[in-house]
Image 1: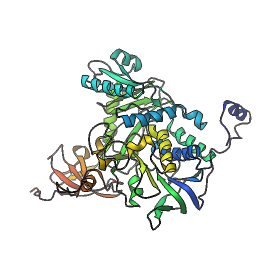
Image 2 (image 1 turned 180 degrees about the vertical axis):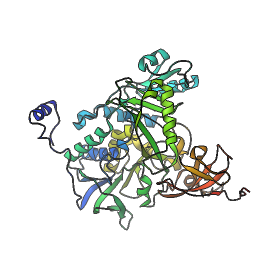
Image 3 (image 1 turned 45 degrees about the vertical axis):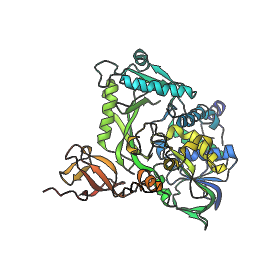
Image 4 (image 1 turned 90 degrees about the vertical axis):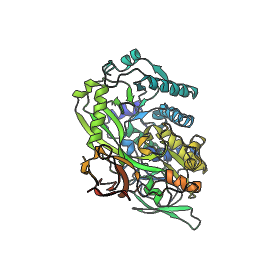
Length: 419
Length: 89
């Protein structure tokens, strides 16, 4: 592996960029591994990397049915943040944000973290009260949070319609300044390259068709479209399709799959240098480094495994974006796409062992998978290596529903479409 | 836009309807064991492909009904009134 640096860039510049080595090997499956990770997205690749780096497990394979990073890690709106109310979520996502802050150096790959701030808009006094509560909870957990007034918001986002005549009049907001965006594809590629360098086999075009178990029920391997692969442990990182894998071992889950859409406009000159979200308008919006405005909103509203959504939702999200930023009404929409979300019954993820010995579950990420990538990989690798949940993910246990210990950030109950 | 055949009003645009969870879930008895209630409240079949779901025609006749639908292609196969509901004349 060529180490990326300013010096290597200059050297390659003089050599016509002909000397770069492949970022990772195109590995063929071996007969046996210590750990097989199913799913070559952000979480699977991060898990494999931390298994090798933190726990010395290098006989690890990542099996991906499509291509690396072709799922939700390449389909999100690239926002990273840790502005959560509940202690368990705050601690986990803050661990993640700290990992994000050192990730480019750690992986020797520029993930283009841009801590440009995430601003949540309040449109009513009651919402300001709830933001004050969440901001205080964040500060008590050691996370930065600032309640901002209208003049500050006008400085942060000059194009935002803050007039009294606005469709959603703004009264204030809550900002986490350390939050922001990261280049989503680079996160997948960075973890893939770093895991490969530590000896992890990344196997693409390899779909798991069955999970093999012995007489005691313990996992002994997986059947794939590229043959049988033996292993001691299997980790599932296939959010969106977790149910299909769990069905192979008759494990019923508190998950419903939904499609979430996102979209980008044509690129324009820099005009928005923070992430702006509005719960009332159901819209979150930021500007990419290429200049496109990227935004998203709610789920389509009914279970779906189609990686595309309906036009009514696109219209709704565009209407919200234009209500917030009237100037954007003149931009043309360039692309829309959809990703499949594991929506859990309390809106929080699941990282845990399962009742099947040797089978570990990482899923149920709802909307929040991308920002969780480093923390998820870190904690899931620990859970697999030690056969015991990492302390940060003990609250994300699968049996929390049976125990009544749900982590319901929005307090809406077991109606996944509302989380 | 998807057209959904309301058993009472006929084919109407999707936005008039809302999804209300899987159909055919049997509510446990009040004194059923906690495991049964956990399964009923939280666990889902989450089928990929053919599904039977409860939908409500909120912007129309406001009736609940059962919709047979494919969760991959979004093709609608059929809709039925809830058991016990009288069929519209």
